[in-house]
Length: 488
Length: 99
Image 1 (cartoon, each protein chain N blue to C red):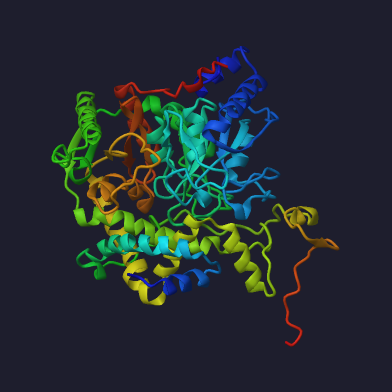
Image 2 (image 1 turned 90 degrees about the vertical axis):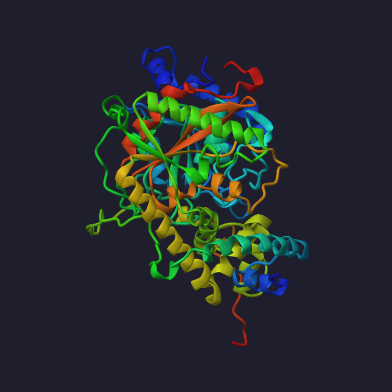
């Protein structure tokens, strides 16, 4: 059986001759088609098995790639009508590295349009559903990449993470979702959303697989000036070496303190917090030191608006190349302005337009100081405070959310502490470029919820090692939705 | 409440338009967004902090030698252009003859 197997398991089967890359591809392809109508994980499903014969851990392993990474000769839409026919003429570095490692592309995955959104509901090809419960969101923006791994179609996939777009869907899908240090993985060929926050991220079903994929992808790239020098470590091998005993972690009282939600009537939220504290107790028994710290609540409440200000402002600029002239559907009109105006009016969905208008508002001369520059100041204050804490602690832990994935029709109270702090704190990892990983820690109503661990800049290996220790404690490893009862 | 005319102006500056219903939805959304934005203004002593534009200082940068890299052929460049003539992208005539 192929479905739900990890990279490590598939590698053993390939190396022992029990299976072949072609067989694995056929099974992944069959599953991708089988689940497409119901879950909509893919924009494009690849029907031909192509891989290079290379001596790496990923040779012959099927995977999926978010549809905002350039793939030469393969449709790349960013799930937007304005790019619905775009076929890139160059490869993203991430894709090139995976190709050169012998990995086998199974499909390009659905995202929230242009990666701007957290619901998985705004793609030009429709809504992505949660494999654990199709009445619920998988979350976004890397929705299809998460659902493809959570359905057991592929053992790993690639996404992008600007606010929490890998780590939140990972929580909703029962997956490991890792966003390494800013610049650890090249973004060349990834369609830019907000360049000062954009990261490449990885979905797997266990931490070891995540280390294997990161080992292939990391490194300096002359095509992406923000990439950092390679640390020359094998993260997979480091998993055996680094001891976690004595590692110091903190959690913020304002995000997930035992009593923070004691008056809240939501039993699911209470269970998520209780189970988090049970996990903390188990971590302590395994040798971690875990302490509660208090963080300025005003700063935490400002995370979400700060993220919106910076990301929407940067996005308006990054997407100004989408004019319908060099590529995309051509607009109509009698002047160059009219042509662009028409193409953009027809090409962007309503949600994207709303985000752009917000970006435009923030960048108006009269608002720049009050909103854009002040958001950048808040960003510094939060990051400085985190770096202060990282002088004493090796990492921060917190639940990714106040429970499992939300239903499609549910509406959050957008000014509540829960929404502003508990549901949106993961953007701290983007503000400071910190390595940050999500993995499942509990099941509530038969659906997974993720815990997040964020560490010091450049200490990706330490974060993976600590995450593996958490995985050993929770026992929630290699889980996926067995929906459909398809044992291929 | 923010005026719809202003929202229309912000949209038009980014070269797109929305319909009346969409502007109304956006106007309602702005009510909440502006309240959320107010939270930024509540941070004390913010004026003493310099804006942060990058997650951390990156010193891993150096000048590289100029080398011929990959380049696109004419046919690759034209691959995404629907309208072509004589190996070039054909664009509509937009210059007013009076100019």
